[in-house]
Picture 1: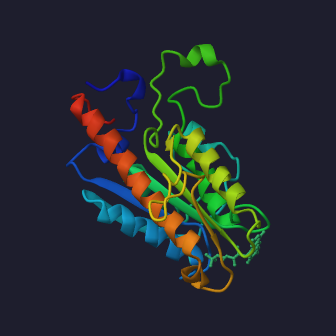
Picture 2: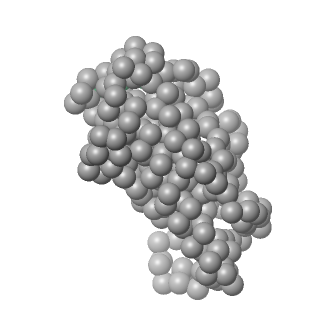
Length: 251
Ligand SMILES: Cc1cc2nc3c(=O)[nH]c(=O)nc-3n(C[C@H](O)[C@H](O)[C@H](O)COP(=O)(O)O)c2cc1C
């Protein structure tokens, strides 16, 4: 039985979320505008590890070469049932995000923060989290009987950061990505601990590298990325299969 409170007014999104089989889908998002760079290597490593754990299919999108504009704050989506006034590559990426059971998002540190392109993508997710009929209202009493649907709810999120210097903001990049996960009611996971050699769980995949693919020389960067992939896959399965075991559709 689908909980009424998480039923969507958007039938298309419900269809996308339907469980078709027991496999989980993990989507990697590369926040770097540099094609084939360190972030791409790390996210790819995480996806490979997720796939190796079994019952996982993966997909990856990169910000490199994509047209992703920041939100204009025009509120058009609030009054037009989630339709964005900006036409660029974002819609295609959002569809993939909504379909996935888990997200692995990586970004290089750019002046201590995630890249502007990744931030722009996050801002454009506003259209996903709107309420039917009462757009823009802050009268929360009015919302209580409304049908609310957060399409990223219960998806699992793991994060990866890389910088040219060891204290260049990697951890901050990761916690900023975690903030996006939290604000979409996702399940945020750590790197789950690096298995070999055994290291306690930390924030996520952390690497130090500057030149393209230099990350391959950073054993911690590679190992922590791998363990993010394993952890996201593990929890995504727990959630998807747990929901199915309860006899409920995810959404
Ligand atoms: C505009 C810009 C700003 C950067 N700022 C930082 C920074 O604040 N801290 C840091 O450690 N590295 C910084 N770097 C270096 C990148 O994080 C580093 O080269 C990283 O490996 C790039 O990842 P990519 O290969 O996935 O693009 C910066 C690079 C650029 C181009």
